[in-house]
Length: 298
Image 1: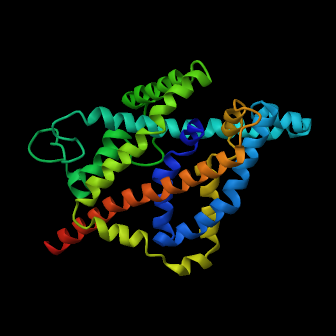
Image 2: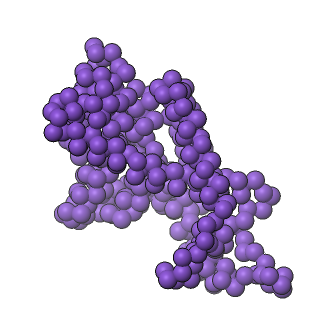
Image 3: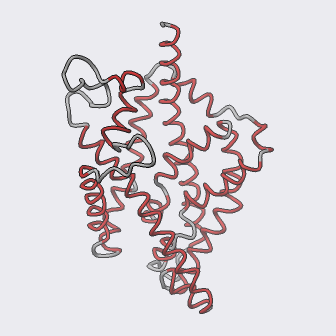
């Protein structure tokens, strides 16, 4: 069960859910999300657990056993997992780059760098912000326009290779190493989120962000896009149809209560999404208050 929790809980909860809350009127997005979590997430999660546990096979084997014509469903789930892995590992490469750069007395994204002749700060950075400059110029090194391809950013290539190396180490011996790694990957996010929450609540204006999050704009409930995004978020945060849950459940006992597992994991997933959004919005409230004060101060 802990492995499935680690598989379900991830960037979809910590990053995508708060973003969707911001896009759909704060707490208003939580209402369709929690409704669809019960009506859509729990049954489909139970289904994946049940077929994997009963047939004792991975995604491709399960769907081929149900009917040979359904083998394409298993192949499609493998392709989806591959695409998500490429996407997630790119983000992990960025995280590693920021981690390596954080071991400095002065964080490189906290202030603008000096220009080439050391007579002042880089004008582009002064016109935007140190955070944006470090992201677009130091990290991505984006080209001025889409017509220029640019070259490989070797520091990002090394970070990407490191991300894939860590992933390989975690799965090198199958479920044995995955089961051990999950003790860290499933529990550490909650520790880090709790630390960020405590720190965030000490910042000026943090509570205004939390109030915004839990103050729903009910007019958003009449917007079909809100419900569509909520349904997509359930699939995304639960990792439904990725094939991984079927594979993990195939290692369970045939007599395991998979219905109970589905309910517990759904509850943990929903709680994590709301908890992570609360943490993020303490920082958003602080940043909004800080910018407001700066505008008043001239």
